[in-house]
Length: 241
Image (cartoon, rainbow, N blue to C red; front, side):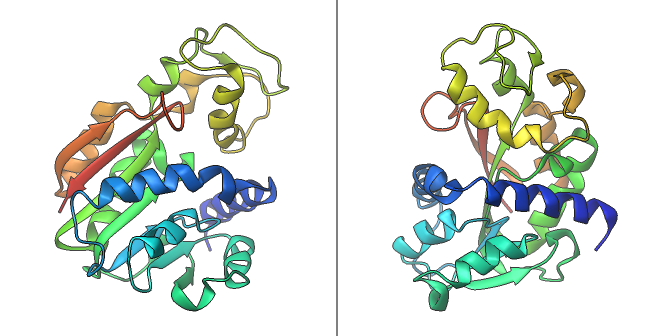
């Protein structure tokens, strides 16, 4: 693995070590899969969950009728936990970096929910989305959920985030606890634990995401800003190859 991959793996392992991650994301995963069903018949589709983590999306895909959904993740700890679960014989798991995975045109749908910021930064976003595009068959559907600049800025009155847990500035529309739940992913996706300006995180804007989707070859079909009802500070993008 590259040094960058090692850092991303460390982020995944840290998130898994938080405990309760899969439980926290179950309603979010279910909403993602329900949205995906509007675009494709999942009962006949080959589906991959990029960054499957604790398996929340894989579980929802199984409930939706997907046969042997594939999950890929950098965290051996997360995958080991999945292999101990009740659905271990119904899913296929890959331990590795999706950007190095040689699986072109293999899936009818790809879900990628909250990849680490190493992939989300403006400079890295387009090639990463290109990797997801290459995984899909012609006419395949991508569901991509990201922390975007607008969605984060819209829920916090100050750009400053203090990682010792103290509140900096004011929050609107959502509670501070909800904001911290979203930003805990950001917290360990950067090199410094000190206070940092959100602008310095190089979060992509919605326009950045649409440009990356278009350059990869996708046609953008829908943008859903779901920060107010499920996971504050995120936006969901659906595109077809």
